Image 1 (tube, rainbow, N blue to C red):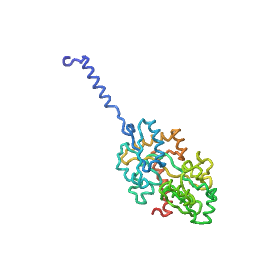
Image 2: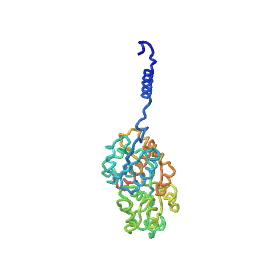
Image 3: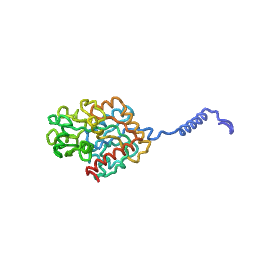
Image 4: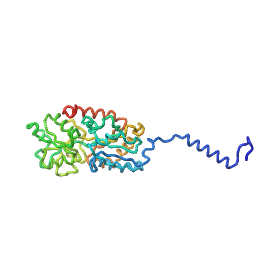
Length: 328
């Protein structure tokens, strides 16, 4: 044993000293936050609609890139109910640690609260918007309407006679019908159905004259339908022969927007991290091409731009819905 006051030069003493120093150095290192390390385990991705719907299709495309970028699984859980309202009303009861993320749709989360849903729009912590499915005006292949001008001319002659189908009330389809009627100065009727599939089935069965659907109807139904116009900024790659509403003189761009939300208990750092990961997914070349192929229009609205995006969309949706008497 070394005498008192004499430096310990025994191997065991040196090793102990070095271990203590190393431990102190590690303790002084900055520890990665939950946000910085996200995801460090599989992530539950709740889709508040049924399997096979467009939200589910989008999630299944995303999970492939998520796995490649992060090494973790994106576990898709379909929980339909109330047009999404069942899940969104329970969002803030979920853990805010990033173990669960939730898909959201607009205009649903803006208008549902005005129609008795068990949540408020401000309850939904939207962190990212990744695409929209553009509205499209659809007719059956044997329809007498060859062009949008044909339909407008008939609607002008017969106010209130032309019947449109669409997916739900207060939805992107419904707002498209309201907006187009206003812009074209016509009056048509809207019949809501439970989902796009039911709406197009009604069109093909001759129960309605036309439908407000989505561009994705084209690849699904092929020659059974014709699209007269689509609400995109420019012609879409899967339907290059279909004119946009804008080029026909109607300022209509948009449809059903989809994105990601977290519980409000999630930290701003985690919200930013989740948005950053989904932005990287959106920028993946193959992923973007796969979304285009099914009729989606990729967009990237990052976390810092969400407040302005939501304010603009909410103002538009509220105006249309109030003018139509859908909300007070």
